[in-house]
Length: 263
Length: 263
Image (cartoon, rainbow over all chains, first blue to last red; front, side, top):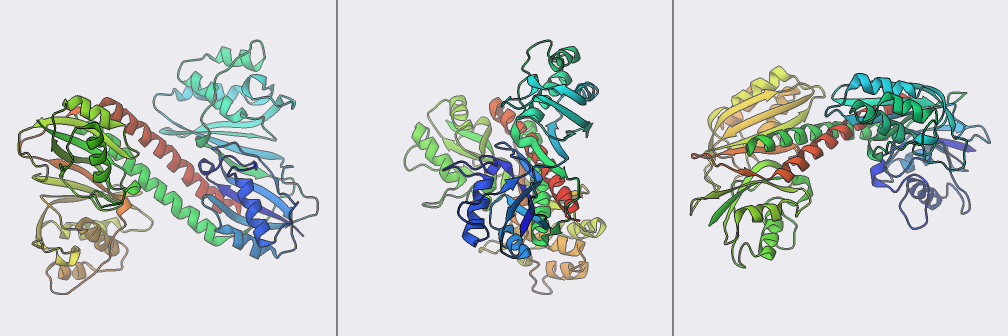
């Protein structure tokens, strides 16, 4: 039977998704555990929708593998095996299902608004919509640099959220688009410069936004995958989010009070 | 010369303030570094305003010690020595100054509002104002259990902040008052039960709120201490707070998306 798992993870705790010998990666941790459980054999590997970079988190990545074990027990056994990796749901999928064949991926990038012109940021982000040659906004790896951004959106005020949707993205593409748009929002780059870089009229490097603020939000398939949820994991993530909010509030007060105390 | 330092710290990274042999504490880390620098001698120790418990953070605790070194260079050398301990400011103080002799301390406790009746919480918190025998709301250590709460206030909605001010507090007192008030806010204890426990009409144990959500906000002295600020530390704390806010926003979205994904 072929099993698909919806997984979330805190990318800051691992050296990226893809396995590397001697380094703690998300794929490495998952495969090790699945082998120990006897869910996959020695030479067998996982397939994954998105090989996120070091530091990048995911709310809904999808892995798939063949197994003889019962799907619910695999999902439950994995659920609490790791620090910072959570199995959210499981679905039995047709033979040959490859999670990489998502028709759409959604990424969200978070920026703290310490003086960004949101109007300008929105204009900059909207330049990326449509089909472009993203040579100036990616780390090229031999793949076709032409990609299509189906949707790009800016929301939020104090914490700015920038969403991108597309069938597929190049290596570092989201972080490079964000860095360029942020530069425009700070008045450090003009819209023309971005447009010229997109039209490949010039070579350009607007830098790369840090990975820890990037979240792979979701993946969409032609035929929607129906996942059975792993309740204990969902509950844990919900508690974790509440704790993070409380700590952020405390940190914010600490910064404010510290500034005031020594005035 | 006697030197007072205003310090802040993330209490979740240390085993409390007070030094203990073989255990990483805030006092232990500070004294070790000061000795290495030659700012204090082998048998000399720090005095401190508040010996916060394991897990409790501070935005403005105060330490004092005698030193022959120049005050600004001590403060600057210490500023970036530790993970999670920050020197915010320094002040030369009169001989014999003991930071423990604050006339008032302010603590803030943070609660995530997942179904707390704020009106009831406010009523419960206000019961503590004034002079009471806090036997039922503290871990007793032989000290007089009568204390006076000068101010108690509830603010915020999603993240509730509960402030307490008083000359001094008993061991665990804030966390036990918060636990009792929270129980009232959740309908798990009545105001009468709290009042009876305060009047010592009954023995009562309302539990203890977790330490990581408690912040020692500030200390007040009869003669206000004028601290010179350590700018690099203030900047660092401000950046840290921004990062915490961004991560909290990401965690919140992750929890929301995860719940939705597997529906």
